[in-house]
Amino acid sequence: MRPLTIGLAYDCKEDYLAAGFAPHEVMDFDARETIAALEASLAALGHRVERVGRGLDLARRLAAGGRWDLVFNIAEGVSGRSREAQVPAVCEMYGQPYTFSDPLTCALTLDKPLAKRVVRDCGLPTADFAIVERAEEAAAVDLPPPLFVKPAAEGSSKGISARSKVESREELVTAVGELLAAFRQPLLVEPFLPGRELTVGIVGNGDSARPLAVMEVAFVAGEDREAYTALNKGDFEARVSYTLLDGEPLGVRAREVALGAYRALGCRDAARIDLRCDAAGEPQFLEANPLPGLSPQSGDLPIMSRLAGLTHPELLRRIVDAARERWGI
Image (cartoon, rainbow, N blue to C red; front, side):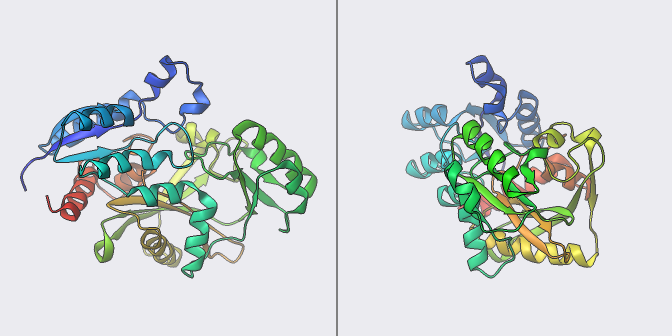
C-alpha cells in the first residue's frame, strides 16, 4: 500500500506545563519523547508525518484548508467529560479521516459509569456500582465494603491511590469528600475486586477485530499493591510486573469479555480494555481506553506488544492499516 501523509494530533505535556498547568492536570498528556517516538515509528513505515499539535491547532489548520490522508490522533483534550471526543468531532466536521474511535465512543468510555451501563446491558460482567455526586450521598451507598472509589471521568489512573480502597462506610465518607474536593466531578464507587488485574489489547474493526494479547498487571513493590494507582503507573519499572497469559483459561475468558466490550462500546482501530477478577476468578470489565497510551517505554499496549514479539512500528502499522481499511484509503 502507498505511504500516507499523516497529521499527528497530540497534547504535549511539557507545552501545557510551560503554559502554567499543574502536573496533576497533565497526567493524561504525552511527553515529547513519546511524540518523537510515534513520529519516528510512523516514518519508519514509510509515511510522511507532520506534527499538528492540540485540538485547537488542528481546527485552525482544517479551517484554513489543510488536509492529510489520515490524522493519527492521540490528543486527550483539556477539560470536560467529553474532552477525548473533541479531535474526532473536529475531524468529522471537516471530513478528515482519523484513527481510533469516533466522538460518541470517546465520550462514552471516558465516563466510566456510562460505559459500565452499556457493557452490563450487553450481558458482559462488570461489578455493581454507585455514583456519588455530593458528599452527603456517600453514607447511602448500598454496597458492601471493601469498596473502591475513583473519579468517574479521568484516565491514566488519575485520582487513584492507596486511599481509593476503603474498608468501611466511615472511610468511604472521608475518601468521597477528598476526591470531590480535588476533582469536582462525580465519583464511581464499586466493590473492591480482589482478583488478578488484566489488560487486553485489541486491534481491528467489526468482525475483523482481534485481541492482540492478554497481559496480567501485578504489583510487586511499594505500598500500593492492590490497584494500578497513579504511583504504580508512574514508577512501573520498579513497582509493576507484566506477564502475558498465553493459553491459560483465564486468558481465554479475558479475551471473550474484552472483545465483547470493545464491540459493545463501538471502539475502532485499536483500544485497551481493562479487567479485574472477582473473588471467583471471573474477569470483570473496569474500563475501556479507546486512545491507548502509545509510549514505547511505558504504554501498556506497547508493553504487551513487545512481550508478544511486535516492534513499536509494527504495532502502529496494524493500527494505521485498520484505519485506512475502514476509511477506504
